[in-house]
Amino acid sequence: MKKFAVMVFLFSLPLWSQEEKRFVGEIADSSCALNIHSLTRSHKEMLQGKGMGKTAADCSRICVEHYGSHYVLEDKKQNVFNLDDQKKAAEFAGLHVIVTGDLVSKDSIRVVAIKPEK
Image (cartoon, rainbow, N blue to C red):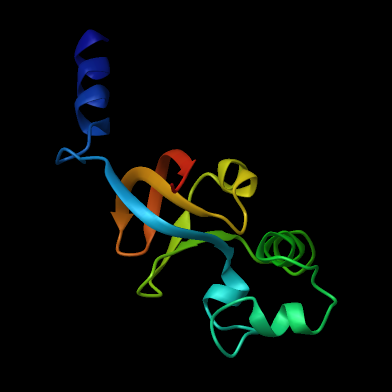
């Protein structure tokens, strides 16, 4: 039995060491950031319509809560990263932040921490 437990443990380890990295950008919603309902990949058009709140945070929260979006990190180059911890991301909706975590694919981050960018 011990041999089986050791084998399970070894196979559950990552094949390479993942180093935590810092990612800087805005916590946005996937609809705006991926240009699903926005022409400029921003909240600009949605906020002008006055149905999505008054701020980027309002727009992101409404899109996530009512329109099937999820929180993402959009950096200054308009790269969009999915975030595995939606609860942490929700706290920072619409804000510029620093996300610490592991890039688990080309567009997904395993979030360790999120803090406001200073």
